Length: 295
Ligand SMILES: [Zn+2]
Image 1 (tube, rainbow, N blue to C red):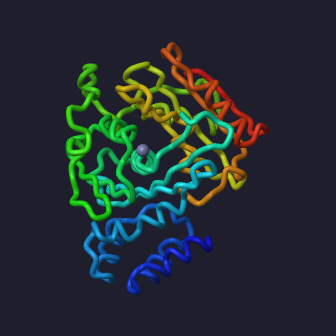
Image 2 (cartoon, rainbow, N blue to C red; image 1 turned 90 degrees about the vertical axis):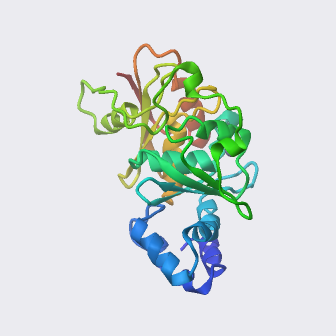
């Protein structure tokens, strides 16, 4: 096991160490914890769910990739289903800072990509920055979840973001994570592009119409997808590549495992992710092939 992660496990309360080790070393561990496992961990440790998530935060943060800041942030989201989703921050040497992914964005997009339509809580090891407060205000469930920080009482988003600007100010009624299918299809047989189309179909781009999605194929054949998550304030928008790269890391893989990438975008959108996607991939490895098509 990842030696840093094992050290974190050894610092957990005794009753949690082996069950958490078993979970995280299980084949196919996907950086989520099922509702029944959450209960089992709570029962074993005597910690309530909130305390348990705080205890697990360093494990989420162990998936961070921070070559510039060396500042690791972990986030754990509770989905509407009761399942927990890990998230961690990610940055890229050589790319502009707008390509950075914050832990809150990572955990929320993780839950979204795996089919959650709302979250009930996000637990973070540092206070959310202004960018993330705005990102979270885009959620369909923005008024319905709590933010839990170490040594603070849980609070709703509006406690951290009073007098907010959000989708409703631009007459958008369906926020991020709202169940959506844009019904795009592909007029060619191409499995990786098809996965990117699947991602584009659930993307949230009400301000530009740039419904877009990414599929990343690893050398072992595994595919991770990312859907575009747009924001009413524009800048905290999360590009599809960032969502997919975050999935790669949070599942325990490396950028060096990436074999090829597919990007699809709706025709006629007001923006394009093509140049930024290419630029970010270039700093990861200029030899990664990028397949691109409009839908
Ligand atoms: Zn942030």
